Amino acid sequence: MQLGTEVERSSLRVTLNLPVDSEIEFIKNEVVKYNCVVTQNFSVNVAIACFEKCVPYISWIYDSPQVSLYTEHAKYPTNFIFAFDKAQVSRLRAVGINNIFYMPLAANMAYTSRINISKQDRLRYGVDISFIGQLYRLDYLKTYTDNASKEIVDTLKKIVGEKAFDWRKGQSIYDTIPNDIVDKISINDSDFEYFNLIGNKFIKETILLGPMIANREREGILSSAGERFKTALYTKESDKEYAGDVLEMVKVFGPVSGEEPYKIYACSKLNLNLTLRTIETAVPQRVFDIMSMGGTVISNYQEEAEELFVPDKEIILFESLEEFVEKTAFYLDHPDIRKKIGERGYRAVKEKYNYVVALNKMFDIVINTIG
Image 1: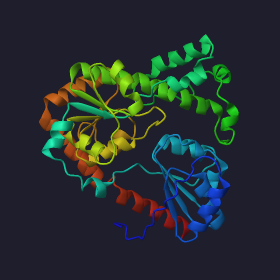
Image 2 (image 1 turned 60 degrees about the horizontal axis):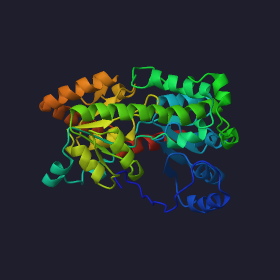
Image 3 (image 1 turned 45 degrees about the horizontal axis):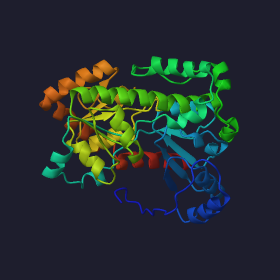
Image 4 (image 1 turned 135 degrees about the vertical axis):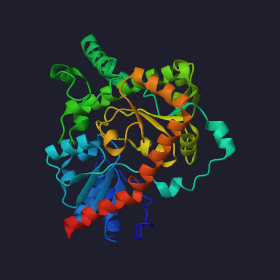
């Protein structure tokens, strides 16, 4: 282990959101063997087990919001929660979770450095612009909107119309649905009573506005890209046919896994990042993964992106659909500049935003806190 620490990986896939007594008992018997426990995202079951056995528990959050954080279990003194979104950190501290720290996400350079790119890979994946992600088809929202009044539907559509494609600093989907409309939206509030540190308005805006805006933005951006540039979308199998119908000029492929996403990042001239609006200010994992392969990132503006990286030097940012098209055309026409941005982004994650650096920072905070 590069950290000089012995690590054992549990085979248990822990439950994140709701306590499961049998799982807690199993974890309690396991955690007493270790000096600390680390998970990606926060698990209430691990938190309970570590608290009862007085074992430090480190969780590194990559979802925003992660609803299991909005419980009393997140307040345990044995927790050390590291969240990648400054807005989420502030919101959680405001509801009494003091043992939370800001930590950007990072690249697994030890893994990506072993991936070899062949001539065949470059022929197979070499497009102008690629995107790996889902389109957030709105089928599942029918549960909430099929029986909704015209007033509710019109309100949601109005908010989506106002927010979509506007990535300027300070834009947020939260506190946008009027309170009287929130009360009329028929999401079963009892399903969320357990997450008692946050109101159902925030949850409803997350569930509804997050995917609705993502769907509008992703289809719009990819359609515009496909009309002008050689564009590829890699998405989940159940969305392939749908994507092919709505994105006529985009080459649509099924899901990718293992080394394949990283080969796409290395071989695409530009790699698109479109951030879910539920991630308020932060940089998602996709950006770090692209940069770890030397790929050039073109991303919607995020406040933390210009804090972590130098715009137009290490990352390309756009604030509107029009700016996306303009910048994509420019950088495709200027390969030397584009490649330099990819090289500088690679150096940034290699030196500052990799697993070893991040985990060392987390362990230092834990050690300094518990003495």
